[in-house]
Structure formats: structure tokens, C-alpha cells
Image 1 (tube, rainbow, N blue to C red):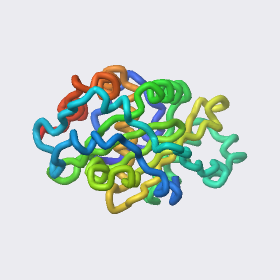
Image 2 (image 1 turned 60 degrees about the vertical axis):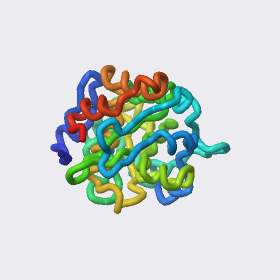
Image 3 (image 1 turned 30 degrees about the vertical axis):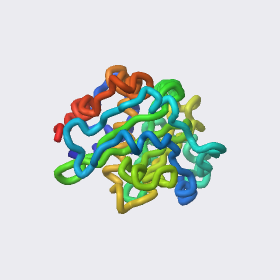
Image 4 (image 1 turned 120 degrees about the vertical axis):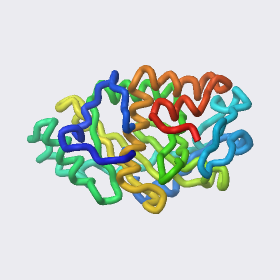
Length: 250
């Protein structure tokens, strides 16, 4: 179900109308945790693998009360110049820069993708209104569900099962940072994902997860599920997410 895309498709200059069929900060990330109201623990069911009717969202207050921890400080972004020769990058075309960025991160416990500026702004706008979501990642004969929390220019992913066990002390598995240095000059936003726990997510799984998250925020049809999760909790059905990703309902 998971695979790396070809170099041409890895340029990832997304079209917001595309439905993904196979729908990606630093060591500092482990110091910053998701904060979710305790009702999450009471409302979620088993996850090994998730059975039919896995989610029963019993309270409309669930999503309204989700928030970063009091006094949350955004992830300290690793400066782009410490990753990339920015001056040299200025001489590259958007396509060349996207390929260089992607190839640099392959097989390093990091994920590198890119997106057009217009789509980044759409992601930013929608994430400010709907900051949370859940995405299953296929593993073997079942899936692990990830909880997504967004505060641009950062996106964090942690295992829902870990949150159930550790609450606000559950560290993210994957963090993503967005670099806008070339947004105006090259119409390109660079995205770096850092895998915090390589035992939990492979590079391939992390890249798929990040791209899946983008698809739910950038595709108009899929975004309706994100809105429902955040604003109409009683109406949200996890099986709709599975169907959107063409995953079986176990």
C-alpha cells in the first residue's frame, strides 16, 4: 500500500483538486507534546487493529476543547540555511530545487517534499480553522491511527494509542516544518518532516502520512471530513476516512 513516488511525481507541486489514492523538528521535537482534553481518552476505543465503529465521538465539546498545552512554544524551527545552501538554491529552477530537496532527505530519517505557495496558503488558512484530524497508517494486516495537530508552520503527528496511554506526555512520532523562503521567488514552499521515533514510522510511512494529511486539507471533498471532525463531532464517522483512503473497514 505504501511506495515511494517517481522523481517526476516527487516534485509535489500539488493540485488542490486531486484525490490522493495512496494518500510526509529535530531532537527538540520530543520536548513538545500534543495537548488534548482528557475526554479523548474516554471516547476512543481499541486500536489493535481498530474494529468496526472504532470511534464514537460522544461530546460536541471534544474538538472545541482541543488545544496546545498552556504556554505552548512552537517547535523551534531548524533554520533553512543549516540544511540547504540557500544562495546556491537561488540559482536553481523550482523543479530542480524540489528534486534536490527531496533527494537530500531520502533514507535519512527525514522527509523532504514541496508544494506551491498557493496551496500552502490554503493549508494555512484551513488549518487555522480546523487544527485536528485522525489518519490511519496501514501496517501489516491492520492500521495504526495517528492524531494530527496543526499550528502552522508546524504539523505534528502522534499515535492515538500512545496518547491514550500517556495523555499530554505523549511525544509526537513525526513533526513537519514549512519553509517559505522561496514562496515568492520560486512559488515553492519546502516541507521537512523529522521522524522522532524511527521504530514507530519508516521513512516511507512518514512520507505517506504527511502527504495524506495534506490531501485532507487541500482537497475540497476530503476537507469536509476535517471540518466535520472539528466542528460537527457527533456527525464524524471514522469509516469515512478509511473509505477516502481506500482502506478496508476492519
